[in-house]
Length: 150
Image (tube, rainbow, N blue to C red):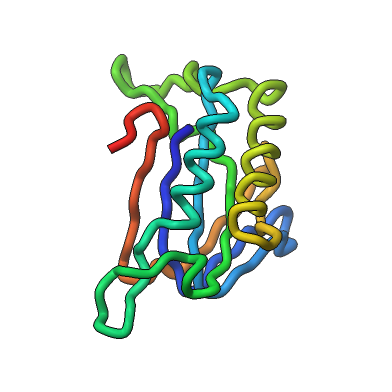
């Protein structure tokens, strides 16, 4: 799994002109799933997201997690995170899992994330043409790949 994590003061997803989800202070997470991903990848990433200390403490240091600050999470599927631009100018998405594999894994990831956070998670709609709006706070943007745990 690959994720782009953005600390936001607000974020929303609009589909066909209708706001599907909106959050205030928290994390907007763009996530992609590949065929090699397992339940263990979902568990690890969910735990990492909930406990990642990227919110300021009283001293202004990034020392608090989204859980610590009572923040919200908005998770949006984005298969293009596995784009390969190695050959030519048209990206290849062969590493991205097909919907029949990705959808159940994405739903399991959302469920795991909700369990870790202790409340429901806002989402986009898998496979939909979405407009994602955000106000990046900081800006703070971090990428995480479950196959390259740094």
